[in-house]
Length: 101
Image 1: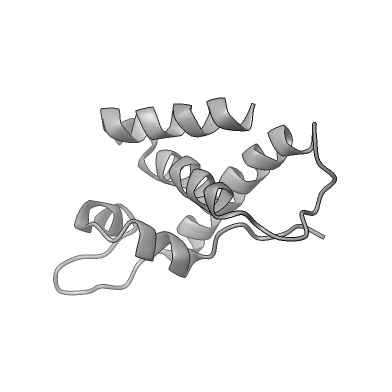
Image 2: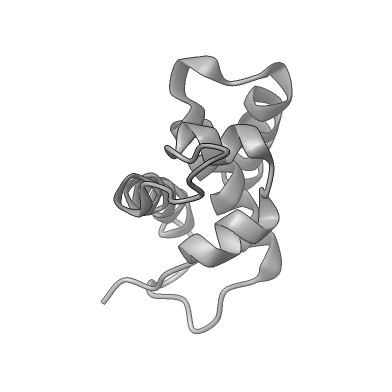
């Protein structure tokens, strides 16, 4: 059984900016986001983190450290932005991967 490291609500509270919500399909008139796409990005980020974590730890983890939630969020946001990632998003992604290695 896979442990969820980050929920969509946790992601949105960590990254509440308008640009992130717009990438997820929200507009000024309609705040509805594409939750399925967000979940897909989070699941890919969790799988990427697991690939590194499983080298040193038995999965699933008993509890999820806050730093792991942050790193999964950074990886998910990088995946969400895809080719539109800012230098800051790129930096946070590569820092997360470096730490997980």
